[in-house]
Length: 208
Figure 1: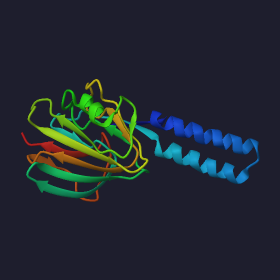
Figure 2 (figure 1 turned 120 degrees about the vertical axis):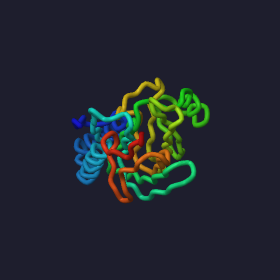
Figure 3 (figure 1 turned 60 degrees about the vertical axis):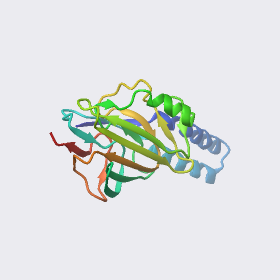
Figure 4 (figure 1 turned 30 degrees about the vertical axis):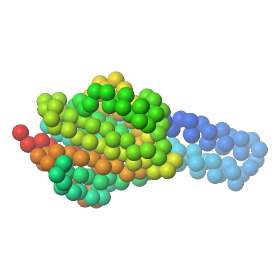
């Protein structure tokens, strides 16, 4: 696994530019207190929207990688699969990444647009979004990721072409909660309170 760092995710450009403009204006007008506040905002924006580029190498196609950064808060076995409840703090990197080698359901993007009014690369606030994935070799094996953004949090999706490799970016999720459902036959590799990292942490593997 090679990890390189790009500075800022594109979703953070607008708030960062606004904060920088406020900082510049405060400095020009000698508003020292506001300048300090805007400087703190700029630093926070740069941290919250940092873009950690992770490239998966030599990962077996029977593996499930974490689709987001976060902390596993609960694990439950239910009839439809193993449910992992994940907390995504704002201080964790917000990139969403492909957990499998293929996107799951053709037409899913059209359904998201119809139900939620989403457009490619646009944000959704206060909605819960469910995404389905499937394995390359077994179309019956499905994973489901449900995202619950916090109020005023940002959720961007850009998987309209449905053509992604394992670990590639498919969106941005600033903060909130998530639920990942994997098949019961998968062998779980994580535990409650584990920190997971998108495109890097091995969540589970499928028993052949």
